[in-house]
Length: 290
Ligand code: FES
Image (cartoon, rainbow, N blue to C red; front, side, top):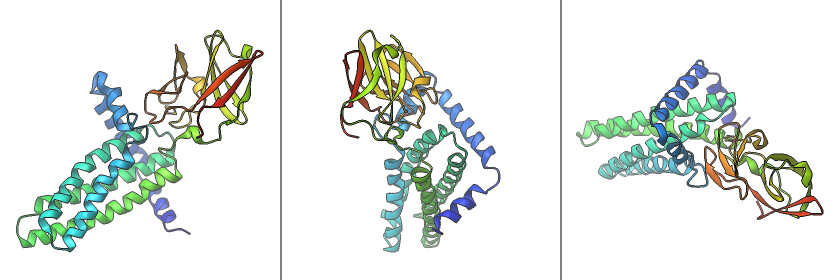
């Protein structure tokens, strides 16, 4: 059995995770709610809507990289430089925590919800060790030795936490683009009769097995992926206002004409299709390979 499996099983068997998840989500919602109208723009920044990719993975490189540098610098006896690296890591940890929390907040399934709590608790613990290490540095040889030991312990905890972070992303699918779960039609393909799509409305069809959302205004038809890129929500069950469809699950909004992302939590736009109407039938083709 791979090493990670018993560690994940152990984490998920911890008591109180459900209650902790509820409390954490409540705190996050209260903090966001206090921002008033800035709530959505701030959430978009944290989710990575501006980046076209979840912001959490690249930001975690800051504390992980800085603390790895601190570990090496401590081993080399470069204490002043190590203190700077520990401090940079602490700043990066704030960004990593807030972006990770924003992604985790919209997770619905129980396993990633619970594992996310363990991941967060370990990261907070590691950050606490580094904060204590930072405070002790520059206070004489005895305190320096304690600071190095605290940092090394924090590194081990952060390493374990990173394993859980990988499990969340790669096994439990927090963060990937769900619209890429199937291959879209590359060649122009039939998507059914124009009359099947209500004027001013939308309809989901399968084109070569790929779910496509058709919207229509008179003779003008648009087509984007019907599976929400965020976590797979069915866009045809959402709401259509003008040229904007809103996902029913977490409220991401996309332009139906080109799939552009208007607001998160999705960090990805929707794949869009070229559309032609030929002899009363709709024909779609992917605009670019996925
Ligand atoms: S599935 Fe989350 S916004 Fe669509």
